[in-house]
Amino acid sequence: MTYHVLVQFDVPSDKRSVFESAANMNAQSVDKEPGTLRFEIIRDEFNKNRYYFDEMYADESAFHAHCQNESLGKFLELIDSYAFGPVILFKGNRTQPK
Image (cartoon, rainbow, N blue to C red; front, top):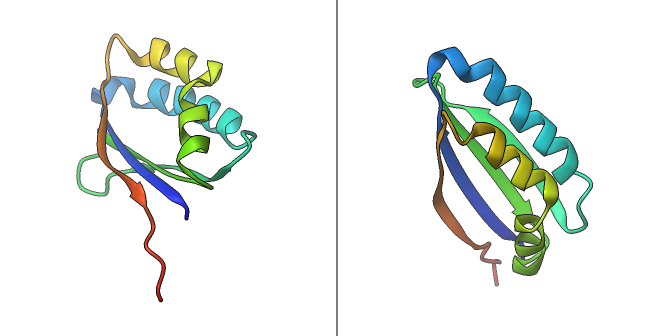
């Protein structure tokens, strides 16, 4: 079963472009990780300072491997001084129809 994670970040308006650059750098690395099926960066329609990472992995172990990625650590280091997050909104397995 696929494993899904939705993460939220709030960013000051004057840091949005810096955040997006750091997030895109991270996404390029994540896309190369084994077991990563989707990693999308989405800016909220109503709150332009809020971003979501919509992530899908082959399984929970692929997500945990992602959490050990050097690129993720670098991303978190780059945004640490100004971004609020990551706030994990949910984690879980997709249910399959019977």
